[in-house]
Length: 325
Ligand SMILES: NC(=O)c1ccc[n+]([C@@H]2O[C@H](COP(=O)([O-])OP(=O)(O)OC[C@H]3O[C@@H](n4cnc5c(N)ncnc54)[C@H](O)[C@@H]3O)[C@@H](O)[C@H]2O)c1
Ligand SMILES: O=C1N[C@](c2ccsc2)(c2cccc(Nc3ccc(F)cc3)n2)CC(O)=C1Sc1ccccc1Cl
Image (cartoon, rainbow, N blue to C red; front, side):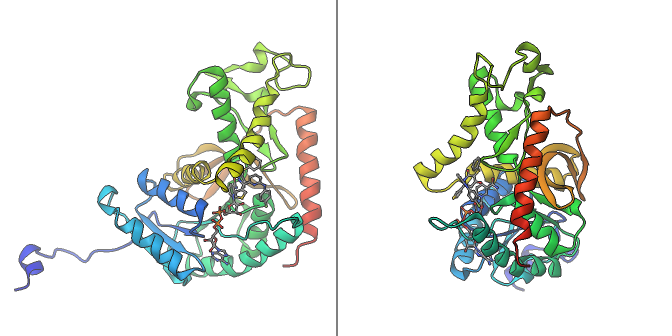
């Protein structure tokens, strides 16, 4: 009798279906930061990695597998073949090509659209009931492209949107207030990146709105210049790029948080991309759970905030009109 037979008395056949499988497409800086966050935080115990680089995807799988003793019975698979993604509850897309020197936004959008044309149909072939989560940039437009390519209802196509923007905003608020970021509540909405919109009227600590304490907060006439907190959200992105060449840990953690909300049917509120009207995918506070977006929180917005959102939607619509599907 073999050692194994001497060791174990089989009771029933083991299955690999953990019910919380997540596929990550693109094992670059963002993708692997998200994978590492999900595995070490116990968001999922079943990860599939997909990339065009066979060596890179196998190397990342092996390196993670070697850390299995420090995880919770994690199953880590990897391939350039999308069959490895079969049965995924969530497919996170971080694949993409980087902006070339002097490249226009539309050119980058078209190159990344061509990348998504290869990825999205393959993901849905193997996981027809999945939730698609997009992080690749420009994330607002590529979330729209993914929705178009997928044919899925909007509620199952979620962009990371201003999740990272809001996280940086809360960190910077916490630094100024001396309170933990988890207790500093505030949302950045609209278009991810340079033109995001901070909702100052909603910033609160334990329900105490800063706008009730300083009616000018975030405006140009605010003598305390709180608007610099939002300005630093943008500046810090460029600072990290200048210092390390890319960003990874914060966006990886933010993707893991969104994945956890979906896998645990949390019905928690997160800044996330959702198709709001016509063809505009902008970030608003979304209630997330098993089947994606359940509700959008109706935040009272000032005329100026609404005007900024409409301006973003118009710019995005112009770029989207130029995309060749
Ligand atoms: N939404 C956000 O807040 C946010 C923040 C940071 C970065 N990003 C974006 O995330 C994306 C990834 O950034 P990164 O630093 O990880 O880039 P990266 O270059 O390190 O990784 C990209 C990976 O995608 C893979 N890839 C390329 N084409 C592919 C295809 N057709 N199929 C499968 N895999 C493919 C590459 O091999 C590479 O491993 C970029 O678009 C970046 O702008 C978004
Ligand atoms: O932290 C980042 N890093 C990136 C990055 C990561 C690897 S190379 C560049 C970054 C940093 C700075 C600018 C910038 N601009 C950009 C615009 C459109 C694109 F299609 C791609 C990138 N992108 C990608 C990105 O989206 C972020 S968040 C971010 C960016 C700008 C302003 C505010 C925030 Cl919260």
